[in-house]
Length: 222
Image (cartoon, rainbow, N blue to C red; front, side, top):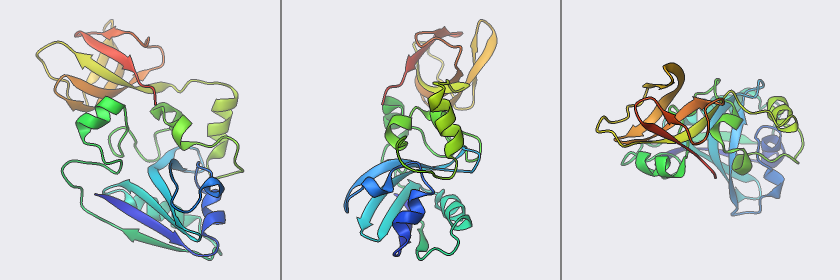
């Protein structure tokens, strides 16, 4: 299960077009796509699945427990807009997140989760590796666009990136643990299940690196 924020009304499409990274106008009724909702600074507030449920109705599905954060962000910028925001909260089920994946499935697919790989107000879109899926670079202006567009135009790498980890040792990987290379801290585990994990590592870490403790880095491609 997940939380859902609905937007209903004649201004729903134009309002969302200026608030999210995905191209709302390119969605037909029944279509869905991933999107980021950003702070004006370009930092991520939420990663959500956007669905055009009707001509004037949209649904944004986010990981359980994060709907209120998403709703508050959208409400903050909804001025003189003929559309209603409604929050539908639901408890998480069987350890799954808003993408429908379990932690092991998320590690296998390299999919970030709110609260683990995405910290509202801190994470930038490029770090997650999801820009190809969640950002439209040809749409018009939206809140938080400047940072995203500047990094893309300059082909600038984010200070850190999300990767998959494997270890052949008997010691399990643990969420929150620091990662080292040559004795230097180069990252941190964000989600772990036994010997596999997701983690953020510094951009200086090679894609095929073996970190201290025989922890192997594997790049994520979406």
